[in-house]
Every structure is written in C-alpha cells, then in structure tokens.
Image (cartoon, rainbow, N blue to C red; front, side):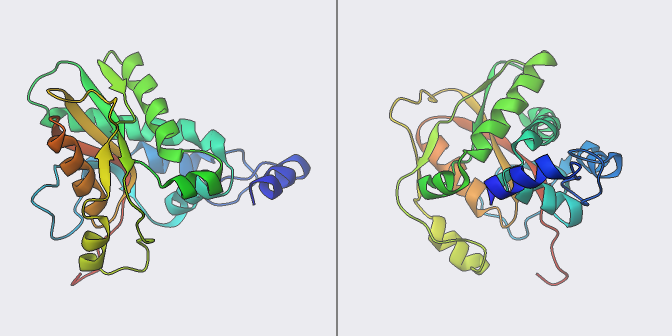
Length: 227
C-alpha cells in the first residue's frame, strides 16, 4: 500500500490527505481542523488511573482520514502537521503539571508487528515532531520512548469497553534503561477512544516512579448518545 501510494503521488497531483482534493498534502480547510483550541477529551466512564487528556479535534471525517493516511498509507510527511497539533495539545496539558520545570513527553508504544507492517513507529515520530515544536516555543520538553508492550494484545477496534480494559491490563512496562523515577511525564497518543490505553500507560509509568499529571492526543472519538 505504501509503495502504491507513493507511485500514485508521482503520477498524479498530490491530493489532500483529508478530502482528496488536488491541493497538496493538506488543503487549507482540512489543515485548519488541526488548529482548533485544545479541550479536555471525554472518553466516557474513565478509569481512576486516567489523567486529564487534552485533544485538538474530533476523530471524524477528514481528521480520521489524515491519521489513517499517516499511520497506514505511507503519507509520512503528515508527521509535521500532526506533530504541531499534538504539540498544541501538550501545551494545554502543561496546565495540569504541578510545576513549570522540565518534563518528558512519552509516546504510547505500538506493537512490534504493527511497526513492521507500517514501516515506521508512527507515535514515536509524531512525539518527536511535537517535542521539537515545544522546544521552539521555549518549553523544557524531552522526548523519551519509555514504554514497551510486554505481551501481545488483541486488536482493540472490535472490542467492547470492558473487553478493551481486560485486553490492555498489564500489557505495558517501562524499558529497563528508561529513567523515569521522580520525573514528570506527559503521555502522547494519536486518538483518545475509550481511555484504556492511556490508563494502562499511566499505570506503567507511575509504577516506575514517574508522575503523570496529564496526557495529550491529536483527536478524540466522539461519544454516541447513551454510550
């Protein structure tokens, strides 16, 4: 799929990843969706471990297409606009930190098989782009890929909320070489859905001695009425 997309980009005018108009990587209208003011996301009934989560936009329509194009379809230059959006959410998340001192930005890890399939670690690269933006803005952020999966998990897409929680319980751990004890860490992910992934990442970091006051995502899945 990635090579096919790249081949089409050579033959055809580059199309917007959000709406497919022949207008470059992102058209003005779709790009503006990533410039919204960050708000606290609401994944529904939250785990008591889940910290406040800040998100820039809704995971729907063009934004869903952008993130899918970046993760799975080889449109890797989207890391820059998505990274800028994530940086805005992280800036908002710093309001929940107890001090204005140095902090870590820790991306939620992908499964190794997903990284192999995609050909890149999409969240690690997006978090790196966001940290560059934060440092340009004068914020003392440091990126650290401190987490890893310690067992296989099922694909979350078709699972119910309780099944997602059970699927992820105990699935993450910190790398042995990751020095997070006593440090402030903001979690970074692409989409907030049920909140279980971020809750599990928070648990793993806090068990290693980190303080996790908040998390940030580019987008948040809108809740259906009654869900």
